[in-house]
Image: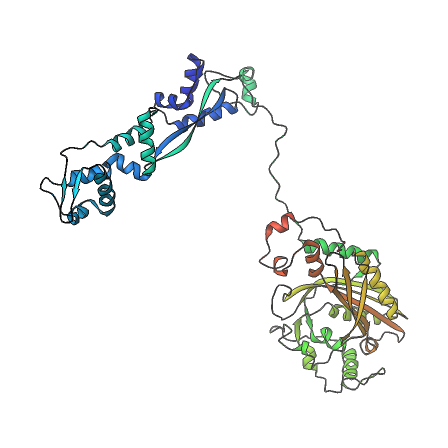
Length: 492
């Protein structure tokens, strides 16, 4: 209806000078007229220019008085000829109307306000405030000097407020038509058969329009850094170890690594033990016997730990606490064949029963690399570490002596972080002990150098994340997964 009114008026006239006046004359709301003008303008049926002017609107209080009358007139009308007590009058009007009406009625000298009685000083009153409010409500133009004084008074009483009125002046546009027809979006078979395609108006094709975004999968930052780590290992000639067994026996996770059964890490406070199945069913018995021997009484130049080694402890199943359990299996399998040097690596999940905070989780990823060959020394380990970490962007390394049950010597690895401007611990390393390697059946001159680090720590550094729970777990922001940049290894 509004569109027909606008196009029809322009068919007979050159211009709609004021959309507000046009809406009043047409009996259509101004908002509806404005919406139609905007739509017609977008398709160049009309040319529209903005009109802005100050207008007055009633406040909530002003609308109330426009209907019921001003408080002062309400008060005068509520006073009977014989007078009334102030308390009775307040109860009759309400405290708010009584308070405001009394103030303005006394100012206008309409009433006599005594302590015990209120009486009228005039017989009739004309409610000028209500009349002014009704004029403004109807949208009348108020430009006289008297009107200006009245508007000032109404504003001071907060009965009206100024508002910027926005409208349009409208003329015919380059594509003006008496009736707007919806453009066709497709040329159909029926159009060709009826031969009406010649008279159709087709919608313009927008070559700049973008298609719907494709919501495909997104790689997690951990997967990106993991892939970069894998590429470094492969470039250095390493072979990936199978890490698909999250459940391990205590034997492969601890005993085969020459870790005593009384070690604190084997306590339930540090390790997740399984209830079902609680124990493993198969272990290489000859190897188990040699491991028991070296634990109890030593061998291969070692005194052992001197305790009664228990098979039931070794049989307990657990969630692996480190991927070195996989390394022990791989080294044992390597010892069963004619020896050949190997380079192995793994990147996978491990589990530890520890408190969760901003830098620790009960489940995380461990990166491990090892080289098994004849005659390896601590210098070889330091050289390989220098090569490995330089590919990560950390060429300045320091080493600190440390203790591990299954490596001797052992070293903590520190790298200088150019971004943080300080030395940070980045991993642990060492040479596997003879008490671990020789019971497996490896030749006496074979040495194994190894190192490990977490996957989460370098990822947090690369992506500027300071809370591990924002990187891994159920609290991860999916927006981060969708928008994180491609990983470029180079921590400094």
